[in-house]
Length: 64
Image (cartoon, rainbow, N blue to C red; front, top):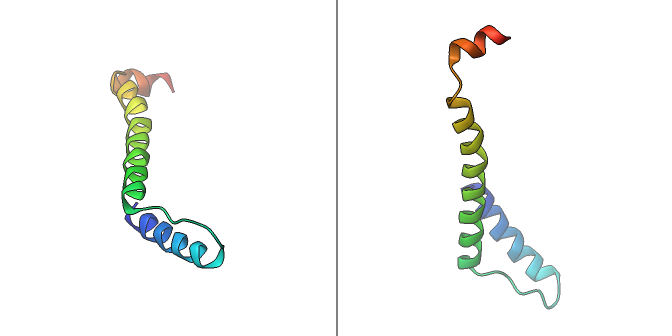
């Protein structure tokens, strides 16, 4: 995410120089976007992991 943030900031600056009237986003907006993206990724990983942790491993191995 850190590399993506640096690249997004650099791409925003590049687009600002190439396009007339484009207003770059602030660092606070970029940070808020990164936090929301991280929360979405954690939620997307947590829900299936929680469901999988409720299954008995021996039963899961026997069913395959």
